[in-house]
Image (tube, rainbow, N blue to C red; front, side, top):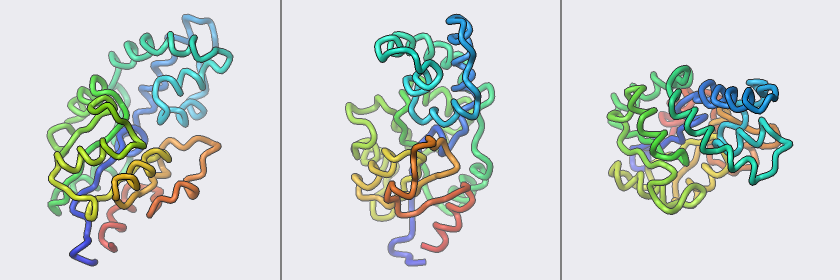
Length: 222
């Protein structure tokens, strides 16, 4: 390991990287589909749309609707989801061990997500992660959102980190773009919510992992 450049911090996207939020986010579609008299989407199909947020999920579930109709449903969806944030949401397999090891090694970790704060904060608190995190930057913390670099720059500032020794891990191309734009090394979490048409190899991430445990191996070998 090059100790001068060894990671001193890891910032993580939320949905599809730190947390498997798909069970609760997809379930929030069911009341809307029921009210509209249409079949709820297949879970495995809808899961891939989670990284696209409420609008993407609704668009995937209701492909016959136009953008204005989808936009009109977003507040209803968010109200349903906000009331059921942490029913079945869990850390991805291996993530608790990863966080424990980072903390034991004095490597700070934090969250930078496009999810709005009114969902991010209560979710992290419900799972006892908020106080453990060195920073929490949500999608509405700043005027800018990923792929712009400002949220990551703020996260590093809050956590006392610098780009040269901080990794950013995410499961969407905008995550990798944001990390690059912030001058960080980037890690594509391909265990997350990858759309069928997406090819993570095209995102130009510095590294790619299939499981959170691989991030530990990566850090050790840097």
